Image (cartoon, rainbow, N blue to C red; front, side, top):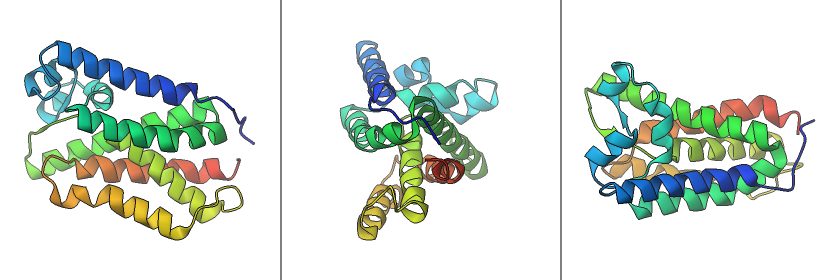
Amino acid sequence: MYRKTDTCIVTYALIGLNAAAFLVSEVMGGSQDQGVMLKLGASFTPFILDGQVWRLITSMFLHFGITHLTSNMIVLAALGENLEKMLGHARYLLLYFIGGLFGNVCSVIVDVASGSESVSAGASGAVFALLGAIAVLYLFRRDIFRIPVTRVIFGLVLALLPGFYTEGIDLAAHVGGLVAGAVLMLPMSRRI
């Protein structure tokens, strides 16, 4: 049984770190400037393959523009509070980071396979890990997680759909995060 908590300090700290990174990027010349974002640690496959693997983590805190930041932080707040209270701080943070990291690794793999060299950033892979965790809770722990199936399916489709037709969205990171979150939640869900 996991130690449940009534506080959401990890969720609020993650939102604070993302907001702080956004402010730094704006002060340095703008969050939509690829040069600024690369200086701050955005993901860029050629750099990562050259040994700058830390970008797989730093890019999780950078966002291209206020809309990108706001949408990810709203979803993080909405999903994160419930999951953090249910899992406890440490397991929730593990879910978030491993999901985001796996999403970024999937993005690099797709970039290598396709020959793409785009600069990417955002907490989307980690946020999608939370969505994957919620899907598993819905499937296997309806006793503690009650939500209509239509909402779960609608939420997943709505979250994934833009990645198929909108340029600049890193679908590989989204799907990678979703899968990682689901896989990580499988053993966790048995002990809630």
